[in-house]
Each structure stands twice: as C-alpha cells, then as structure tokens.
Length: 287
Image (tube, rainbow, N blue to C red; front, top):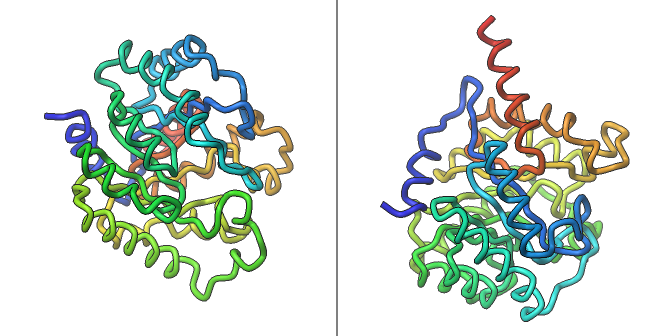
C-alpha cells in the first residue's frame, strides 16, 4: 500500500460530530517572503532540521512551499521555485521515507519535478486554474491532490470584485465540485483528492468566518476537507494580534470549530499548540 493509500484511508475515517483529531499538515516555507516565517528555513539543512522538529511535535504530513501566496505577492519563475524546493524536498524524503509530503505549487512543471523527487501530493491554491497541465501531471504520477478555491491570483485576489458572491458557500462548493471533476476526468484518483474552501483567498474577514462556521456543509461534496487558517491576517484583525507568530492561540480556537465540523486535515504552523488545544478540548468534553 502506498503512502497516499494509507494516508487517505485514515483521513476518510473522520466524520463530523464529536471533536475529531484531524491530520495535521505542518507548513514548511522555503521562501524569503512568506508572511509568517519567510527566510527562516530556505537552506536545505535548516529545512530538514525544522521538518524533524515538526515530525517530533506530531505532524502527520509536511506541506512544502517555495512560492509565497500571501495577498499581493507575485509569481516566482518556475526555475527559481524548483531551485528553492528540490534540495530540501530530497533531503527530507531521504530522512523520512514514510512521511507524507505535499508540495504547495500552482505550476505543473514544478509539480512534475517534485513528484518525481518523492513528493506524494500537490496542493494547488489556484484550484487548477493557473496551469491547465496540472491535472495531467498529478494523474501521471498517481499522486494526491488538494484543490483550493481562489479567484484571481495572489496579487489580485483581494480586489473588491473578487469578494462579491451571490451565495458564498454555494459558489465555493460549486467551484470545488467542478475542479474535482476536472481532475478526475484527467485521471486523478478521486480517492486521493481533498478540497479546500480557501479561507484567506479572495474572501473578506466576514466571509472567512462564514467558511469556518459552515465547514460541515462542504462534506456534501463527498471529499475530505482541508483547511488552512493558521496565523492568517483575518485572525490578526479580528483578535487585534498584529504579529503572525503571536496568533497561534487564536488560530487554535478557530481550528477547534473545524475539528467539531469533522474537517479531516488542517494546514498549521504550530503543530504542538494545535494538538494541545485539541487534547484540552477533548478532556474538557469528557469531564
């Protein structure tokens, strides 16, 4: 059984209801300009050491990204993204042969290179809009795929016209349904697809909170759900926390709502804090 088969078998055992323990995708940014920790882990050895700490903290997977997608950021050239990504990826795969590794990229050429080097999954924040070759590349490698909702690109996604929805949850769900269908038509195994409603991407603060409060409704799409809310700007604005690194406690409070909604996977910066919050909430519920 492949890493993906094992990973998704466990994912699909999670259901909404009582507080669940989702699979945690630890964030490993290989960029100089990510909003929370840009430049801290862009050397291969530093990235591998950080990955080891994340695994020790309890991470189930690691999501590596070599292109920042913070609001207002521009695209990184393909060869530069590969240059940043490949050495750390190879080193981490060699040290952790059984660890599920995801690569956060919009570019099919980057995905192709990363999957050939040992990655298991592509996390496409564009929802397969940026590069039409992406579904075929994922299918060629029999890889897993995370499809996220976003309008525009990171440098345009927060433009006012991209924040207007007739029915936020319905519109996002329809986008994700069509993107998943596109992937399946290209040959991606539907049992290896996760869907991400895209909190923080082409959404207002109020819309982000709606996607969290109504997360359980996306289970109707029939795929595991993946949410990435960790340390995002809307959390800082809502709770008055300007420094991203100080947002872990507030992040964890919102992640508990997602756990109760049965969200199967969370993308997180602070694995230990997330697990501690889940354990504390579970203990309180039993007392």
